[in-house]
Image 1 (tube, rainbow, N blue to C red):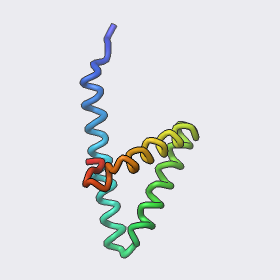
Image 2: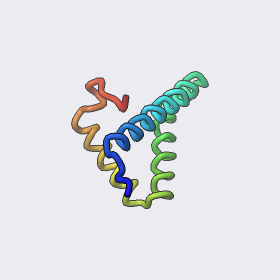
Image 3: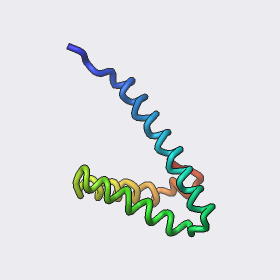
Image 4: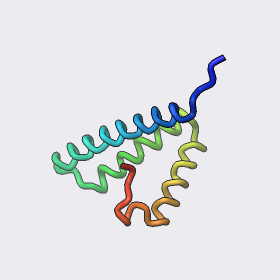
Length: 85
């Protein structure tokens, strides 16, 4: 029986995360280039993400993500120059 390698799975997940960041950064830049205000881009990105997560994984998953992100904001992660990169 084959046992999954947790390091391999973690590397795959990290690679997917980096591709997602790149895709979102490109979409964000396109929105800005089109003259869309940053707050509008941010709100629609969050609404889209939370809607998809709630649809696919349930409302509890979406709420858990909101809680995690709230904690990251409150800890200053994003204002200290930290980001998802």
